Amino acid sequence: MVVFGASIQAILAEEFARRPADPRRRVLEAVEELATDFGLDAVELYLDGLFLFPDVVDEGLLADIGRLQQRLGLTLTAHLPYVWVDISAGNELTRRASVEAIVRAIQACAPLDITSFVLHATGPFGNEFSPGVSDPEQSLFLRLTLAAIDRSFADLTRVVPDAPLAVETMDGFPFAWQAPLVERYDLGICCDVSHLLVRGEDPIAFLDAWLPRIRQLHLHGVREQVLGVNLRRRIDHRALGGPGELVDVPRLLNHLTTRGFTGPVILENLSRADLVQSVATIKEALGQ
Image (cartoon, rainbow, N blue to C red; front, side):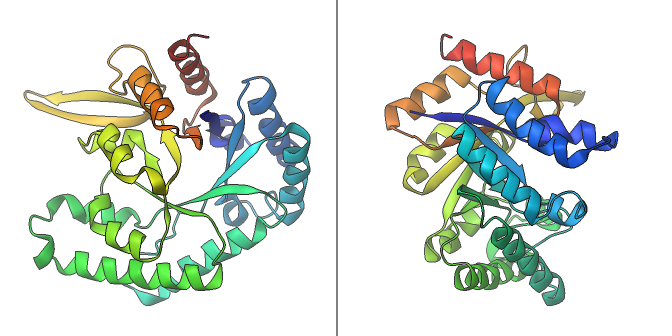
């Protein structure tokens, strides 16, 4: 049976911008709210908070979340740091610092039972240059990027060998380019269904190809934006469902059930309003 959950950012992204009076308490309340008010069985933590808000997100707070996890019977996943972090950096100083941030985030989660740690193998620069690569064999940037990812995967699997890493499918950098490294280091995958759709790929075909390695899914709405005559682009991280939705939610959920997928499906929305609509769309697809 599929486990449905949401990123904690769906509630806290907007609230932290407004500087809540007691942010530590709000983090704990948000976890409980996702479980009780939204009826979700999984929550994805945002581990960039360890470094962006160190006075709020620390090992003490994570220990409190661990106790909350036990009381509520929650499945927890965690998104590893990616803001100003890039393990694919050809600049070795940047790469090593990024690996260190990820290792520290994993180690800080010791009080928790984490089902999967979502990992961005590439940063913004990888997403920026990759659309212009016509011949991967001749791209200097791609060669440097893949070499850096190789070193980073080697570092991570050596230092935190038992961490259930899940490399995320990105909307810019093709997963196919890093797939040999994922297999070489025996890593899991976070299949971001919506990122694949933005790239014009079929998420069902991806699921069938990679299901044994897929630890979890990310799911959010995708719309097509008209920029001009014969010029369109797909935008994601929107509410799931409604007019123009490109994610075929019933087909996706039926396929997951048919294939026996039991990992978490995380709604990766960035606002409470979007999450409300996304949860309603999931329940409608399930006939609830």
